[in-house]
Image (tube, rainbow, N blue to C red; front, side, top):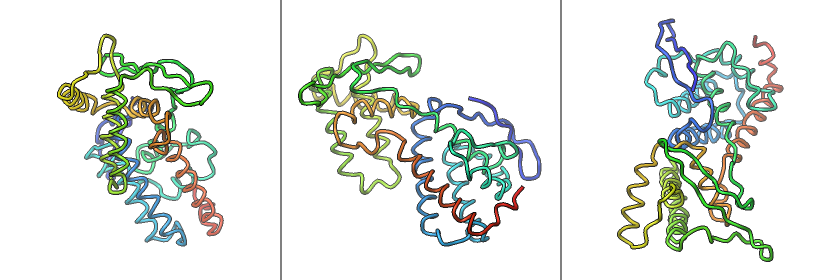
Length: 287
């Protein structure tokens, strides 16, 4: 975490905002709230792709949706008082970069536009740390305890991932969680069920040293319920890597096993804005 000093539009100090520097410092809740808001922004831009990005109506709609993204991620009431920042300058800093990490925040870091860029820089640090074919354990720390997912292996003949590292009860419960998600995914625009599905996978698959997954139905139900509540503040990196451990063993939910698709959408968004910049010629005048 690092500190960002916030000020109001009138220049009044609003205190310090602790901002995550790495994906491992972003909670799963934050990530999903932001992803939903960013997807809505992307959808709105697509619907307004014929408009000039410097048209007042477009700018107002874009700024409001960027604010929503920042507010959903930060969850801090002070964001309402933070200045928008220089809209043309902010776009200029976004456009033309080859990597998210190259975005220059100098001069806009304490504005809504700067915070939005900062979120992308933080999320871009996420990396998959588990390869189901590598035959190694995956471990993560949560609340001072180390949790592990035991190694799996790929059959040399069939090339299928074997679940020999899981008990029957674990495999059945994890597959049932995926089945329920697939049943509800079409009616889950805010990804609430996606969030609970990831928590269920963590609750089922991640064990500390000396722990054993229960075997009776009543014990299993109690275990999963308690662990879902316990892991509700897990960071996005650990949760997505736990999911990747299991999701990479089959096709189910393959599209949600990481954030690459999410960043692909950002690339398309920036490409679209870049094209409209060259058409309007207006952005080159921004300082």
